[in-house]
Length: 383
Image (cartoon, rainbow, N blue to C red; front, side, top):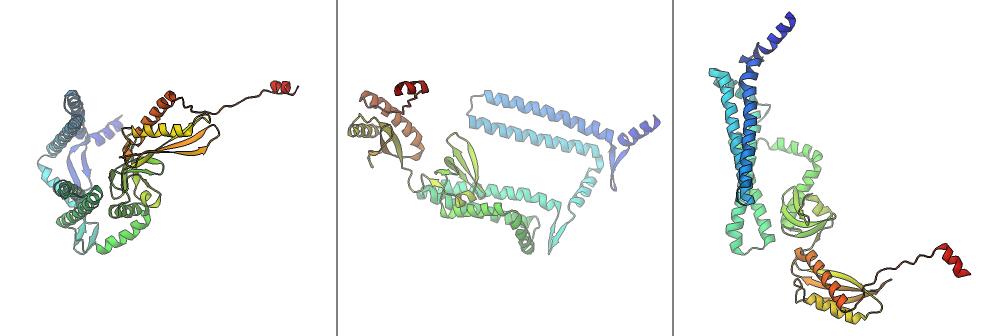
């Protein structure tokens, strides 16, 4: 029993030491004064966030404004939570807070890579995160400003705007990142050799990423696809909603977001329905009975297409007698529409109208018939 008490006393009530650093509290004090209150505050803040989210959902604001409000509320509460953690830590360390912070800083500032005048430390790596984030944010902001304030007024088409703004975005991002890296003490010229060696090693391990990156640059400069195009690739049909350096997003007809690596656009066949023109031909295939007049059916079909709300006047809709089928005469109706996004709507509306008009005009749509002869009936026929 005495041994158990001694073990518990050593574990919970002995001052904590980390290496040569002796902290001014024990494990029991850490649990009671820090972990317990921080845990309680965490759950309280979680309830507050849920309550505010419910109030926002019940408001009459637009959905996009609700989402923005929720995002900023979450960020604000998280910042307050981090501040409280800092207050609890400083209260536990007491007057020695500055000394401990300096000791932690000295540990994190120990270089593990030195090249020329550059010292790579843990702090350097931590500081690169906001540098890359700020560079990316400035690049996107400049892209939006140029797109909105300059290119729209100059009358650039979508494909040219996409290529130009993408080059500007990544150029600005690289410049800002290089400036930021120099501010945090990274000598880029001294790291040229190091980056070259790392590049060779990463090239073997990250071949797919490099291939997607190069494919992204090819897409930006050669523009085989652009944002807003309706495409079919690897059995996926949808609209290209976003093109990035490594991957692109395709929004399908079911409003699903499919992330496609950019190398797929270079290595596979891509059906781009709106590469040069968004106009497209909708083909409705119909069969009529051998008892009906194909000339009459063709005239009815062309009239249906001409009166369709989706059909263009030029080129005019046209129907063609395709072949003699097993059950009927096969006819195809070709209708030009203004935009590929209306393809399925136009196909549906024209099919519905064909069904109604054929019924009014007494034009029959044949279907296969199957005759089953049973063995007993076959024997009777022979007799």
